[in-house]
Image 1 (cartoon, one colour):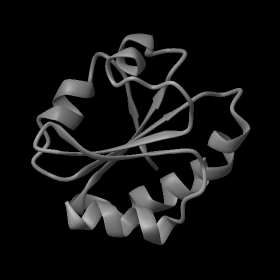
Image 2: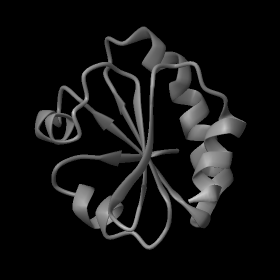
Image 3: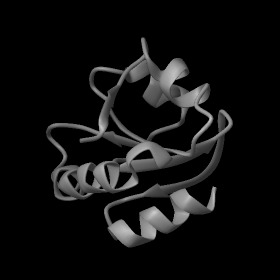
Image 4: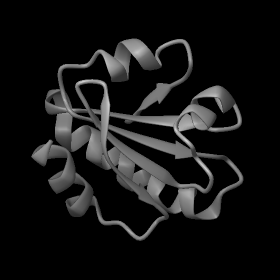
Length: 105
């Protein structure tokens, strides 16, 4: 299961992580977000301790969404050493594609 990320734990779990991080910005009302949600959770289980996989609910963490310029969702960020290395907007993704990007960080 992906971690629930918010303003309170984002810095500790994402920015200070020594592992590659995938952050999924999503919302309850977003159809495409709900489509890729289970895939993100599966990826979190597959990666185990090799990476951090988490979700930010944009309606509950508006400051984080604004900070990272989230204009449409789903919005996926790949972060390593506190820096955004890559991003994907939309649901046209595969679990293997996301895993490859994450392990390449």
